[in-house]
Amino acid sequence: MKTNLSRIGVSLPESLLDRFDEIINKRGYSSRSEGIRDAIRNYITHYEWMGDVHGERVGIVTMVYNHHQRGLVNAIMDIQHEHTDVIESSLHVHIDHDNCLEVVMVQGEGSRVKGLVEQTMALRGVKHVRLITLSLTEGI
Ligand code: NI
Image (cartoon, rainbow, N blue to C red):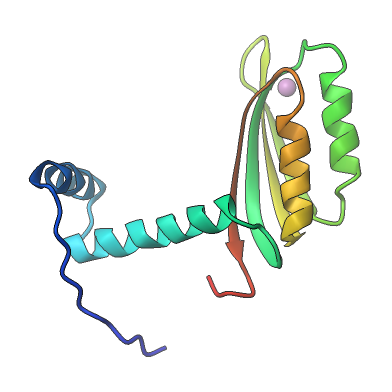
C-alpha cells in the first residue's frame, strides 16, 4: 500500500524532547520519526476509547481483582455471560493468594464492549480494568 507522508514542524520544550529521545533509544526505534508516528497512533487509539466507543471493535480487556471479595467472582461471571456476543476468549491467571488477573479478548459492537468494561469496573474488589480497542470500521 502506498502511503503519502507529510512533513510537520513541531516546537517542543527541550526537556520533553530529551525524555522522548531517551525512551525511543531504549525501545530501539530506528528514528525519531518512527517514535513520533507510534506515539500519534497510540494517542489516537487512546482518544477514540476515551471518547465514544462505538462501531465494530476488536480489543482486549485486562482486569485484576481480589477473588476473596464476597460475591465478586459470581458477579464477574454474570456480566461476562451477559456479553457473550462480544467476548471471544479469556485467560485467567492466579497471581498470588488474593489476586486474579484476567485477560478477555473482545470483538464486536463497541458500545457492548464498553458496557462490559464499565459494569466490571463498578464492582467492589476490582482493582484495575484496562481496555485497548482498535476500530475495524475506521481502519487499524
Ligand atoms: Ni484466580
